[in-house]
Amino acid sequence: MCLGNSNSRDRELVVSDGDGWISTPSIDHDPLESIGTVVSLTRNRELYAHGDPAAHLYKMISGAVRTCKYFSDGRRQIGAFYLAGDVFGLQMDIAHTLSAEAINSSRVLVIPRPALMALAERDNDVALRLWSLTTRELRRTHDHVLLLMKTAPERVASFLLAIAERVGTSSSVDLPMPRRDIADYLGLTMETVSRTLSDLQAAGTIKLPRSQRIVFSNRTALERLKS
Amino acid sequence: MCLGNSNSRDRELVVSDGDGWISTPSIDHDPLESIGTVVSLTRNRELYAHGDPAAHLYKMISGAVRTCKYFSDGRRQIGAFYLAGDVFGLQMDIAHTLSAEAINSSRVLVIPRPALMALAERDNDVALRLWSLTTRELRRTHDHVLLLMKTAPERVASFLLAIAERVGTSSSVDLPMPRRDIADYLGLTMETVSRTLSDLQAAGTIKLPRSQRIVFSNRTALERLKS
DNA sequence: CGTACCATTGACGACGGTCAAAAAACGTGG
DNA sequence: CCACGTTTTTTGACCGTCGTCAATGGTACG
Image 1 (cartoon, chains in turn red, orange, blue, yellow):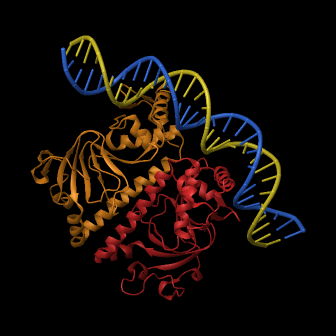
Image 2: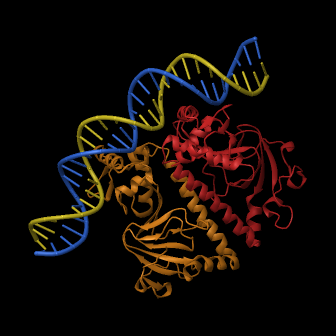
Image 3: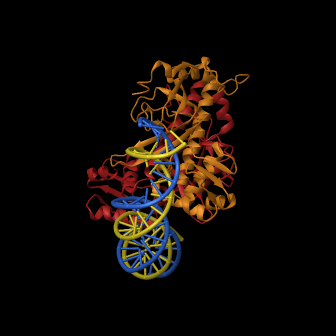
């Protein structure tokens, strides 16, 4: 199901949303944002499940969402993390191949696919923009593939730097997701991720004041580890 | 560089090509094919290198191409295999993130990006089709990510079935690529791939009359292995 | 303050990598 | 068509990385 039990308080017209997430309301105002609805999600709330009809496109306003696939034996693979500003649900499949869940309290702009497609057929810029968004997604997924062939320390180092580039600074980052999510994204176990972070701390490469907070005390060493 | 030392004999206008590769020259004739040039590639010939400007889109006519990335320590990751009919080079990046090489003698339709973009801006159907092609690529790359978190036997089994779906029959397949390429695609070593295939043969799941030919003697067991 | 949940650490084992050699397959020229 | 050299594939022995299982420690929240 999709957004089934979200009550009316969770939904509001995007135009009535006033906390400044609209990127550039001026000249090149994003047409995607004129046909969507804002939805609030609580931690671990499922946005859509594997197999659901792909009826919407999503744009993150705040918080974090993971897409993932559960295997019969309980293993889970995380396909991607989406943070403020990211657009997802771009696959034109009939049904979603992964499910999407909120990692923590999040707000998402939900854009109905039919309205979007109608817009794309009228407005060539929209069609090209959808293509552009999809190629960005493709590039990230390619990077994910490259990540998965590396060693554990390389994966962790690459991940920290990549996440820092999106939500952190050059000297630190607050990880929006727990260890388990990082592990399932990197194709490792929670224990290996934890051990690797401890090793990096012991080597003086990072500091871990809190488990979610990473301080880069030797960024060069991290970059080198990336391989 | 890109197709640098291919001589004029290697290039010919697509309209002059007469061996019937044009998919449907009738009602919905693919507009992509009206602005391209056919190029012949020999084994291991590089089509474009990592970092080259992404100036073209490519459509496989015959043969097989791999996209890959070389790491400083000699490791190599293969991003995808492209076989007859496949379109690649869809990333809208300034530069290619992977290189592309012919696995064996191949013929490729080369479509200049500027002409393509001009067409996409005029013809909305073309823009939407490019999007559709990109989402297909995205789906395959997602599947690749899922593949890379499995165990070695699972990866090999999944690979065999996936390739058979594209170029083989339900009972056999002739692998267009050597073991080394399969290994670098699956994130394993050549030895592990070879050993796994030998194990599958010993278990009666497959037969290997020649190293490139796989006969599925127990397809059910293979499907089950896929996990 | 107690109770979950999450993260860390330890001990151990298995899967897959590495190094090395043998065997097959392939291509080339006599 | 066969002999030869090269490349690819297979097989073997051994080792390291990472997964598994289990216990402990930390943190958030009621």
